[in-house]
Length: 72
Image (tube, rainbow, N blue to C red; front, side, top):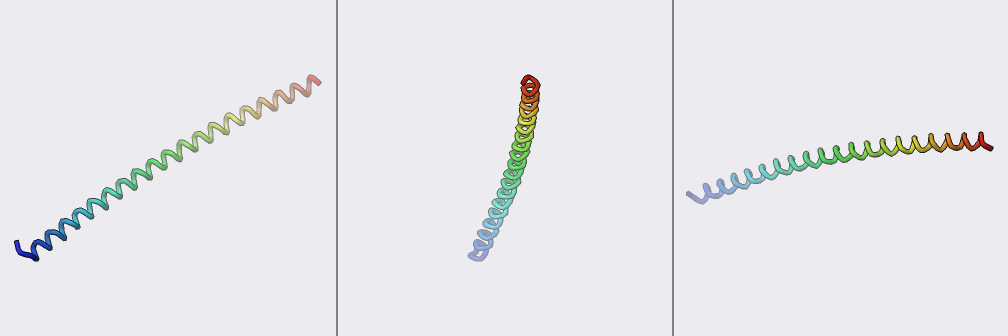
């Protein structure tokens, strides 16, 4: 193999490696994006549950306050 052929071969090999690395980076970015979306969804659901519990607690407090007002 001549010198120019070796250079072309090296360039092509490096291009192929670069393309593989770009593809791997794209896959990883998509994976991280999916994980972030799932994490956000989990956090949103947690907040909804917290809001629900707090709403229930406020309702109970209001009921108790009403009972106390009636008792006194």
